[in-house]
Amino acid sequence: MKRVVFDRCGPPPEVLRVEDDVPAPQPRRGEVMVRMLASPVNPSDLMYIAGKYGLTPSLPATPGFEGVGIVEASGGGLLGWLRQGQRVAVLNDRYGNWAEYTVTKARQVFPVPDELSDEQAATFFVNPATALAMTQEVLKIPRGAWLLQSAAGGELGKMVIRLGSKFAFRTINVVRRRDQVEELKKLGADHVIVEADGPIAEQVQRIVPEGVRYALDPVGGAVGSQVVASLGPRGRCLVYGSLSDQPITVHPRQMIGHDLRVEGFWLATWAKQQGVMTMLRLLRRVASLLREGVLQSHFAAVYPLECVRQAVAHAVQPAKGGKVLLKIGDR
Ligand SMILES: NC(=O)c1ccc[n+]([C@@H]2O[C@H](COP(=O)([O-])OP(=O)(O)OC[C@H]3O[C@@H](n4cnc5c(N)ncnc54)[C@H](OP(=O)(O)O)[C@@H]3O)[C@@H](O)[C@H]2O)c1
Image (tube, rainbow, N blue to C red):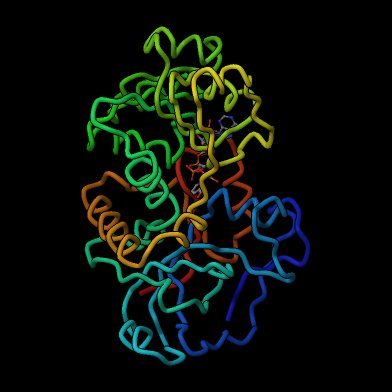
């Protein structure tokens, strides 16, 4: 089979290569072997390859955390046997989905409804489950409350805006490109703030003078610091990414005076802390909200696996306008 590998961590367009004649991995008990159809290039994949993620690759390594494929074989166990032949969303916590075949735990594949395209099924877990878990399970944002988010024009940010319309919380959205303002308003954003128009906290204060109660930040650095500075009394901010690669600074007096909570959120850690029933309920909600279009991704480009270097070079570009997808096989 073909697979993508890297022998050292570094800039993704430089360190990735394609091997085209390696044996397919074999599943052990409790695992399944999946023939991959497609897998997105997510920021987490790029950080993993660069050696800047929370998991250290055991080299040589194959990237690819999520995707869609068909279960070809089970290594034993009831769940794996049940999944054989099904089209499934594939989560791979050891990575390895950028390959024609991958092996993962049977409980980490989830059958996807027929009406979902391969593209939407390939992006079933990472962004949709994170957007839903952060807003509905962790922050539990009440109807009418204000949520401030940075990087609002990214794929996950747009899901949060549509979740706001669906569950009736109001969103203030920070973008770095003015050309995204109208697009996000059409999606249902209540307000869109452009970074260049002045300190974010001052712009937020003009909309919500007492400060916001809820915030999400995947940027960090100056933007993340301003997001935290926009919190009002008992404000809570989930930090879920490090796009700027810079630290957040918070004034201790604001933290103490406003009784603030600034917390990290990582889907992998959060999911491990949940019971099976909570996760099943979440994934069923993801499937239903994907069908409704609330948690859908948009795609900037599709590349064959052999063109992985071009795919990752595209994915690191600013203003790329959607997910980059690797097409690996046909149904
Ligand atoms: N913690 C978790 O469990 C978890 C799960 C899923 C995703 N995430 C994180 O969520 C974030 C967004 O993912 P995504 O799939 O939505 O990515 P995406 O579609 O690539 O969107 C990224 C967005 O961030 C903006 N951006 C990038 N660098 C920036 C910077 N330095 N300052 C300000 N804005 C910046 C981009 O703006 P332009 O459009 O102008 O380029 C784009 O709008 C990533 O950090 C990812 O790692 C975390």
